[in-house]
Structure formats: C-alpha cells, structure tokens
Length: 256
Image (cartoon, rainbow, N blue to C red; front, side, top):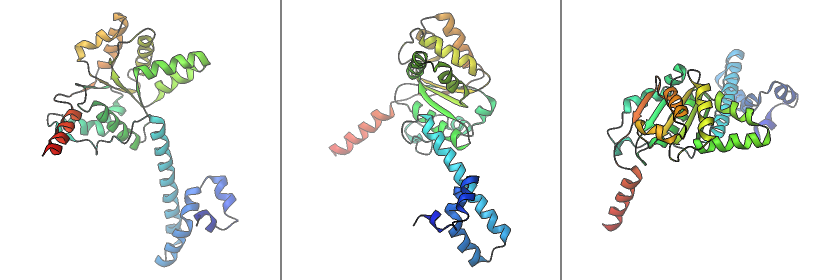
C-alpha cells in the first residue's frame, strides 16, 4: 500500500506545501512506533524530522550521482589494492577524506594503462559526493564537444559555468589523444578559472614530463600544466595492467 495513502487527508496538502514527503512516507510507521514505545510528542516529532532530513539527503545524493557522469559503480570500497601493493594507500585514504577539496588543491593520478587510475578517480569522486560536493567526471574530448555544441546553440556560457562551478572536476585520460585547437584553449580556460578556487583531478597515461607534448601551443600548455601541478597531490601508479592480470588468472583457471 502507498504509505502516503495512510496519511490523514487533511494533512496531505499541508505536507505537499511544505515539501515534507519524507514525513508522509514514514508517518504511519512512526506513529505505530510512538504508540508502542510511548514516546513523547517531541520524541515523535524528532523522528519525523530525521526521516525528512534523510530523504532529502538521499535525494540530493542521487541527483549528484546522476549529474556526475560516472561510469558504473567504481568506488574505493570495490577497488582491489592487492593486485598492486605499491599503490600509496595512505595517500588514497587521505584523498578519500576530501580534505584536498577544502584546500582547493589539484590531484594528479599518473600511470600506465590498466593500473586503476580511472577507478581510483571515480572512487574519490564518490567520496566527494558522499560529503556533499558536486562532481563532474569527463574527458578532454567531452569537454571540447560540449563547449563546441554550446557555441553552436548559444549555451556556451551555461556549459562553461557547469565545468567551472563543480566542486570537483575529474578529467580522465588526459593526453590519450593529442589536443587540437580549440581543445587546448577550452582546457586552459577551465583550468585557469578553477585555479586556487576549485579542485581538479586529472588522470593520465603520460609521465609528467610528457604532458607538454599533448599541447600544440607550447606556451598555452606550459601555463595550463603549471596551474595543474601547483600544490597538487600526486599519485603515481606502477606495475602491470589489472585487466591483463585478471585475464591471465582466468586463463590459468580454465586450463587447469
């Protein structure tokens, strides 16, 4: 039965006006609990308020997850640290506290393909969302595509503002494809606006000394990289690809 149908009819418009659907969903159950436990009016009211707060927090959490652009449920809890014991778990745990977002500091995760950069980045992003921060997970190509589409439809400023205002912007696989004009200009403008005002997390297969090669305009590239590396937390991953290790294990099992 719909729990809202158990709410007295005279209360429904009042709860709707005050947007208290969380209370409406829990009212019947809390009423029974209050009678059985002989709760005071204030205790009963306190439980209803807690239900409403929890509903609103869950609604906001779900909204931030939808808006983030995450690919699947890649959380830190689901990350297999055993496949690469060299990963700096202490730094990952520190990043999971989201202290770096409060500091407005960048985070750079670098390593070969398949070592877990994207998973760790999304896992940190999930932690940020749990802490009430807004997150966007994207790539340099998607940023360029969205801004170019915005230029064509007259919504450039709106799209640009979205990338600027997110508490945490995650740019995955930086340098996987060389930047072309105006991609390098878009990225430079976004990083420049976010510098020391918002946190940006970048993952890349390239070593730091190779980042300059991704930019056709070397001066623009130097300025962008300088802003990204200033006061940045750096997580460097080494070792074999997790995917190749998993495939090897599966092949071994199938042949035994």
